[in-house]
Image 1 (tube, helix red, strand yellow):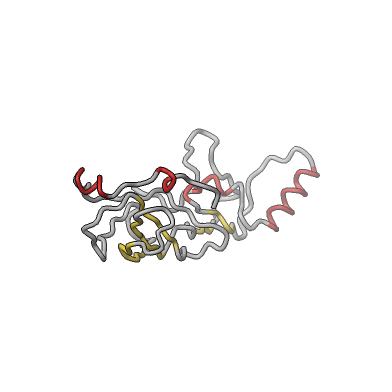
Image 2: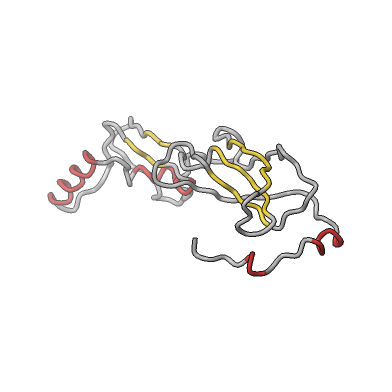
Length: 172
């Protein structure tokens, strides 16, 4: 089952409220440094343990007392609106538009989309264009793109010759 509050999937602990970590302080200086970092904490590293996959003894978020809180920001870097195009060659000025789709952040992690504008022509290249994400301002994370369909026949493929230069990736 998908874990949307997993640090490796983009989740972050952004606030721990009044909760204080339980730490054995080695010196008064370490206590002062910890208190300052706790006050200024935006993304709290100690509490981040609760959104990591480890479960060994000692891999926990220890806080003082018997009551505490943590606010977790779920992933906002997932793509939202995106388009899939078919290209006859790299740099094709008239790509085939298979459709524009929206990733449902509350849906299953792996989502399938039916082509909106089908084509009887086969394409050697597809282009994914991401237009927006679910709110992250710095980056967007795409974990995998899968394309399913039917291969065109060998006869049709031989008429659609592809130059290897069209497939070469350059700095873009």
